[in-house]
Length: 476
Image 1 (cartoon, helix red, strand yellow):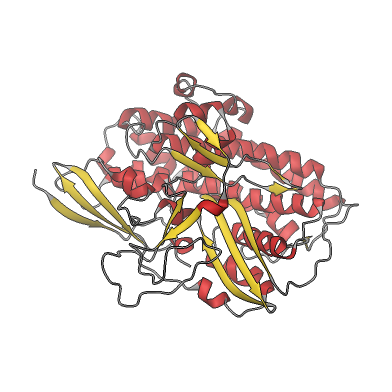
Image 2 (cartoon, rainbow, N blue to C red):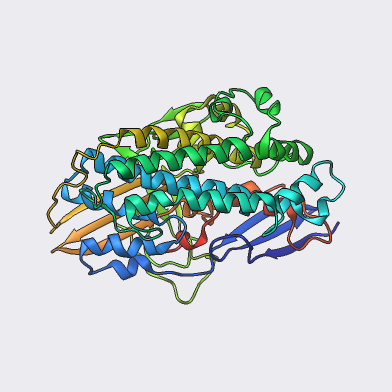
């Protein structure tokens, strides 16, 4: 089989533009180069603006994870001004964020990831007819179910945030809406209905039963629901053997409330979790169409290289943590948080592992949301007054559905003097750094099988989608 180069893209069912150039030798990927070909410029738009404008502009980066962007901006401004959210406000913000992340996860599984297995290339496999019936794009029964269940779940966003996407409800001092007793009851009832959907379709059993899985052997015995169908597909196609990432996982800790986080922060590597030190983050520009020195985002700039000079090949910067490549996402969060099944899959770091991590997080987030909804107290304050910030620096770190999201703001003379954002897909789809080390998805693609006649290789599709890229968030 001859050596060749292959350009894969644009990818369908991906938010934004993505191209991946592959060097193929002997029928396998020898090297991969991920390109984010669309420049956005949001960080440049923010310069000179009133700091509060970040609450309006940054959610417009993305229509899928706008609450994540809103929360990160609010926490960054609160940090710059030395403020904190009212406890009930932080709780409501966590509910808004958790609902968005939960909706994102079920959408990815049902509408973005699983439809690839309904392709005619897999006809004749024992599971193919079931996948076609459930997951054929726009036609499968799972698509209809998840669309209806997701729409009902998002009513919570209306109750607490006024609208979705691009709510302005989350502010440095809390949230703008104080729910009343009737709102609380409706939120609880909506979550109960969504649990029925999850337990009826996705897991075909109690969420707690899936959360109790602690080993790969126990996982392999799960045969119920759409989760069980995915596991059948995974075993047959060997999804546990492809897409191995850097095996270094980062989480900033999900859902900050009152000085704590509902899921742990840290960096997992070789079986050990160490603290996450944001001061160790550096954005490498060596292979990005950006000008300027490598820098910590607090001192970083966004200056596009309009000539697109070599050796750059992407608008995406290459964030590194202490000089190392890290992977972020739902699976990374569950590993850092210490879920036994995630830890059992941590050294596998495969397509299967990422999807199982997302399934674990769906169940866990649902349980957390139910607990938080019960804790809402309409008699308490949901917002505390905070003054405008004239000068200061702040960082807002949250966990979007796809992974760690950070906003760094510098305020001088009452105006934004610097604003840098590192989104989850910036971490995962980064280009090479100055040492020539590939980013997470570039490394995960090495070894993927490519047939002689394939121009959009199935193995490449599965690996890329396991990261759930959101390219409009990647370049700002």
